[in-house]
Image (tube, rainbow, N blue to C red):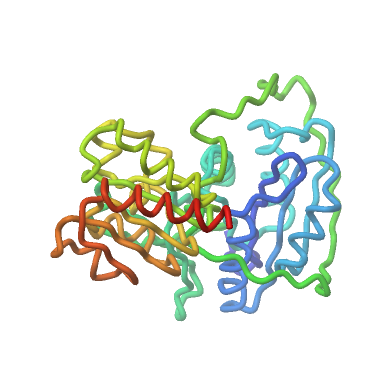
Length: 336
C-alpha cells in the first residue's frame, strides 16, 4: 500500500427521510480543517434515494465534492447495501480518511468498511487533529471508562476511519452561493445480498420531542434529584422552555433515567445556547460533555460544588424550591 495514492477527507452524510442529519454537517466543518492541513479536498458521500436536496445542503456547508449513490435499494439504511457501496467507492477513489458520525448507522457501518479495506477504525472520538509532521489524523477518544483520553493514529494503512460523537464539533454557517462538483456513481446491490428490510419506523418515547444533541436548551438532572420520580420536574422545566432533558452519569448509573439522556465524556456531547445543571456536582467527566454551552446555569445546594466554577449563573439553593419558581416565571413570560 502506497499511502501517497490516498487523498482527500470524506464525510459520510446520514439522511433521515430526505433531510441531512446534523452530525454530518458538524463533521464537514471539522473535515474542512483536516483537509486544509494537507491541502486536500473535502468530499461528502451520500447514499440513498432522491438526493439532490441533500447535495445542495452539504454544498452550502462546505463540501468541495459530493459523491451520490442513488437507488431504490438505498431508500432506507441497510447494512449490506451501504457497506457494498462505500467499499466500492473507497476502492475506486482511495480517500485518505473517512469520517462517520458516532450514531447507530455510523457505528454499524464504519467497522465493516475498515474491515473490508483492511485498515483501522477509531470509535467514539471527541476530537480530531492533523499531525503537522506526518499528516496523519490524530483521533482522540475516552478510554478506561472515561478516566483518560487516548490519542490514536493509523499510520500504516489507509483510509483512516473513525466515528465521531455527535455534538463535539459545531456546524459552519451555510453559504448558498457555494458550488461543488457532483459525482453520481451507479453502484447496484442485488436484492438477495440485502439481508434486512425496514418494515416500519416507530419513534420511541425517549427519542420523541427535541433531540438532546440538537437542542438549543438542555435541562439536566443529577444525583441531587434523589430519586427517579423527581426527573418529572426537570422534564417540566425543559418542556416549558422547548428544550431537551439531560442527565449526569450518576443519575443514569442509578437507573433513574435512560442512558440515551446521559451528558458527559461517556455519554453525549451537547453545546446548547443554555444549559441548566440541576443537582449536578460538576465532575470532570460531565463537564467534558457540556462545557461548550454558551450559557451555563447551575442550581445546587452545595456552594463548593465544582459546577459553579464553570457556570455563568449560579443559584445556591434547593432545586425543589428554585425550579418551580423558574417554571412559573417562564410560563408568565410565554403567556405575555
